[in-house]
Image 1: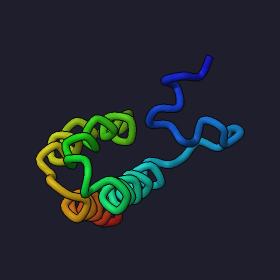
Image 2: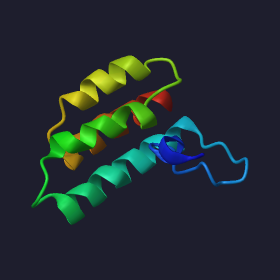
Image 3: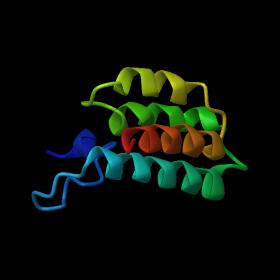
Image 4: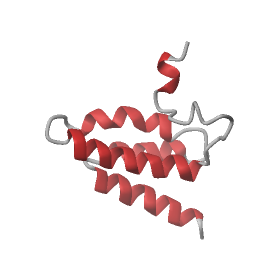
Length: 91
């Protein structure tokens, strides 16, 4: 039974391809932007925050990143926070 297993794991049907942390974070950015585009007029951005744990888990510093993301109030802030993290990893 899949039910909640797909929640936060759009790669469940990817036939064995495990996404990298960077791929997950880039999808998180896309997810927040789509949320604002499609639902932003009807739903508060706070609704989006329940998805952060699914995307941001299982790597060093995930808890700190989630804490920073919980302070974001829109997709642009999420993108800035995630982009800064990704950039710091490349140094």
